[in-house]
Image 1 (cartoon, rainbow, N blue to C red):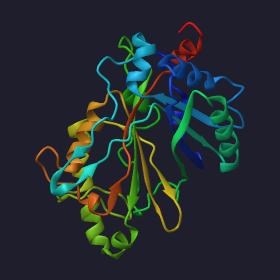
Image 2 (tube, rainbow, N blue to C red):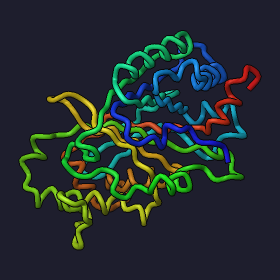
Image 3 (spheres, helix red, strand yellow):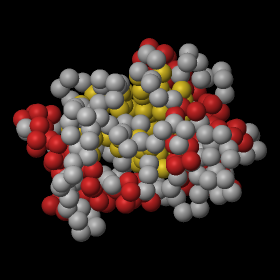
Length: 298
């Protein structure tokens, strides 16, 4: 199997930045892929920064068809759920996820990579993130309780050996704004029934409601994923960056439809306190595939 991009599994980083790019007018898919794949070279991954590169699936497949899952598509259509709830589609052409020990090195590296792809692509969306109280999200609950261990995660989220795109993974990137005032005015018991877990120790409720977040995203039902979520924003405007990896798009898409109530079930109770602002799928190729793509004759 191809070696995955190491930043996917680099837990414990204290600062994050997500840069989504759109191609400049007249730029080919080949030029985009070569430019972003070349950023993996040591001369640009400086200062202890992990740099993970991903592409709109159709862009990557056009250039590297043997290294791309055949049926993977971008987040091109919004998801319309019950009660008028909508998850927007904001697909871009490429994404760079930077993570590291401090924001200053991310700042410098981010500016360097933006300069390196100038004329090829420009930043369409930018979000900076940070951890909150080790492993909590801004609801005060543990985030990623069901994550596989680092030993298990590659076998769960990487495209298997022998399949197109082996060693790569599918990334779902979504930005969710929190209504903190509404959430914090709810009792702990209400919050626990919304999430489906206890707040102090993250134990799943025996009588979890069908519209709880845990029930809506049940990995035993939909398939297992690896979450690298981070809080984002300011004191007055903040939320969660959902950063979810899977070996295929299906588990991620099924969870979103379930959360929205698009498949006839109950809408996720958590969506009454959070609003999705963006949504995109990216294929994150293996490091080996990036090396191949960075060659001028890719």
